[in-house]
Structures are given as structure tokens and as C-alpha cells.
Image (tube, rainbow, N blue to C red):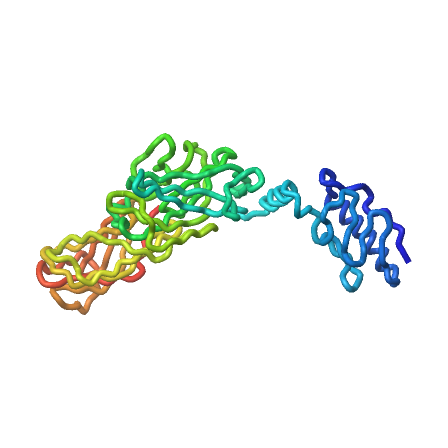
Amino acid sequence: MAINLNFPDQTYSNSNKPQTSTLKGDLNNIENQVNANETNISTISGNYIKKDGSVDFTAKQSYASDLSFSDDKELVAKKYVDDNDAENNANAVLKASHNLPDGFGLNYQITTGLDEGGSDDLTVTLKGVDGNALSSTNTAYFRVENTILSVSSALSVTVTDADHFTWATGKIQANDGQLFVYIINNNGTAQLGISSSSNLTTVATNYYDDSGQTGSSGHTNIVMSGTRNATNTCKVIGRINVQQASDNDWEAPSTTKIINKPIFETDWLQWTPTFTGFSSDPSIVVTKYKVKKGECIITGAAVSGTSNSTDFSFTAPISCINESANNFYLVTRCQDNGSIPSTPGHININNNTKTLNCYTDLNIGTWTGSNNKGIYFTNFKYLTD
């Protein structure tokens, strides 16, 4: 027995797609008819749905997989966007973008490029997830707080061969480093930013934009495309591996790694500290650091160096936060005058400095000015911004 049902209640076309409420109403009517009849229904008249799931719409679009019957005659709606229609797909992506969590993006990947032998700059570019340039039919979307940013044209930022992130004094240079990629909301217009900090919510006081450097240099610098606006807000959308030589030229990292999602910490990375208080620097040196959401964590050892001073210090990879009374301490194991004391020493870093001071006890005990000395430190954590 065929069921006479005028479905849909209007002709649907590319420019006249069903509203969700209308579609649900039509589907409910059909389902009620199906449930009321146990016969082997083969068609529904009008613009009809067959039992094999095929659909005959006047617009002749590819709706073959859109509506179907399950074995228990329950009508299932799968979708009604034409898969072959780029405009409809773009609209579907736009709708999906409104459900993005804060800081997340849709249809993007981060790429890097080097101008080695030329300007030696680093360029970071956003592309579609398919690897092609962003366009009106290949648009990326990002949510920054309550704003949805669309990027439908080329967006990139160039980091020149300068010590923007003070990596020279931190001795991160000549080692693989990692930088965080930001999407920036400039009153509804998307901009791209790069920073060594993962903890920025607005464009840093210290920044470098198309107008040049503003503010004093510091680890919270952000290098950005376009011109800074005082109300810019930003979100981390990824992370890249980089390497900067001691002459500030950008070079290929020993390990290429790009993360295309919000991430707020680095891997464990190597830095090369500068030591004070030695005629011969420690021969056993393991120095690793991790940046994590406004903190720096360091771990390692520096022992078997020849002392020529009662002082002992070395450079940290990143400066301590510039806030008064923010000094950080860690109890450590020491080596002094060639042996390991039975009492612990400690290490500390003071606010707004990049110097790690080492002591032979929990006060400010000094070192023997000869023979070997060193220190072991594990997971020493301090605030950076």
C-alpha cells in the first residue's frame, strides 16, 4: 500500500533549503505513517523517498544518502547539504565554527618558511587543512572569546633576524627552540602572531608589528602581522619548532615539528648556560627546560667545574617575572671542594633577572675558590609572565 503524503511541503532547491524545524516536521509525519502501517511500503508519492534510501527532489541534487529507512522502518535524517556544492559546504563549516570552543580553529594548518642566504627571516603562514591557500571557498575560522574570525585570504607573519625573544642571553640560540602561534582579533580582523610565551591573552606590551618594535625587549614579545591595536585579544592556535643561530639568523631546526591546535607548553628543550665562578666550566652539564603557561621549569646538573671564586651562578633560559617579592628557591644537592656535603644547598632566581644563583647551604653559603664544584637541580619552577 502506498502512502499519499505531500512531502516535502514545498519544492526544495539550492537556494531554498529546508529549515531544521520544517524538515523535522516532514520527517515526523512520514515516520508516523510508517509506524501505522506494517505493509511493505515501497514509495511515498510526490517528491518521494524510496525504501533503498534514494531521494527524488525536483532540484535533482545529490541527496541519495540524505534520508533512509532503517530495518525497523525508523526514518533517519543524515544531512541535507549537497556534498558537491562548495557554497553549501562553506556555509556548513561556518555554522560549525559557532560551536567551536574558545581558542579553537577549523580548517587550518600552520606552515613555516625560511629565507636562508637572503634576509634569513622566518615566515609563518596559515593555509587550509588541505595544504592550499586560504580563499573564499577554503576559509579558516577561529573563535577568540565571543568573536568568530574568518580568514579567507593569505595570512602570514615574518620574524626578522633579530633577537626578539632575548634568546641570546638565555643561550637558547644554536639549540632547537619552540614558538607559539597566535590568532589575534583586531576588532573583527584576524592577525597572526608569534611568541615564546604561551600565556598571552592580549597583545603584549612588548611587541613588534609592521610599524617596528615598541616597548622594551623581553621574553613576552610577540611579533605580529599588521599594526597593533591596544584592544587586541589573542589565542594560541599552535606551536612550531625553530632554530636561531648566534648571529640571529633563522635556520632549519634539527627536528621539524608543527602542532596545529591550542597547546600551552613546550617539549623538554636544551639551553646552553653561561657560568660564573669557574676557571674551567663544569664538564658534566645537562640543562633542560620547559615553558608551560606562564612558568619555566628547569632540570639538570652542572658539576666537575674548576672553581676560582666563592660565587657560583649561571644563566637561565628565560627571565623571571618582573614583579617585586617574586623570588624562587629550590633545595639542591651540591659539590664543593671536590666532594658532596652532607647538608643541602639551594638555588634561586630573583624577579626580573635571568641569573640562577647557587649556594652551599639554605642560607647564602659561599663556595670554596678552588677544586671542583657543581650543583644538581630537578624541576625548579619559576614564573615568567
